[in-house]
Image (cartoon, rainbow, N blue to C red; front, side, top):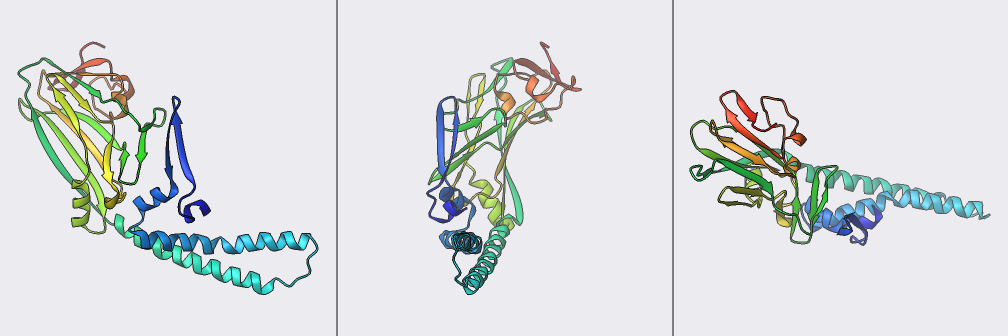
Length: 270
């Protein structure tokens, strides 16, 4: 907390496979708090809140060392400062909480031509310079301009006709519906489609000016009957509760071919 207050000299470091990603408390705060004014108010609140405990420890140390000075008014002043700091934090917390009041979503849709292939191969693009925790299924990176986050859910559903549809659904929160919708629209996400290969990024990006307001992204692939897909290794990172006839778990679905039928998704090579 103190490091957070003093301009972000402290940092959070992640490392995996010999590589590391670092970010500061200061950068995290700028993505959460509305503006620099809120940042400094929060910093002042944390500092004042911690003043009384710090003075109390100092006084106890001096008393143990034999000091007979009357520290009553110093401690009362520190207690008053902590009360003021607590009040400031309540104000900034309330102001920040308003940015989560409303939720909105936007949806884009792409029709994928299916006459050139029998099986669509689906995988993930390689992640570089972004921290990835495979055990906890988390992608994270943050800098002064933008943040990359891995809150992505991938699902496969039955198409209402003979076409393949790729739907990208963006969600975000805001102080009102219009702000939430604008923030959802601003989520930056990309994927690659070439011949019979569909490759997704395992993360999306948000700009610092948009702030973090629980942005999420959902990908839905709608398959017509008899259309098959091959899920490559690594897709378990974004697969989210795909319904299938054999009730195969999400983490066991990759490395298999799945075909859409009237009864639902069926494994063709299990």
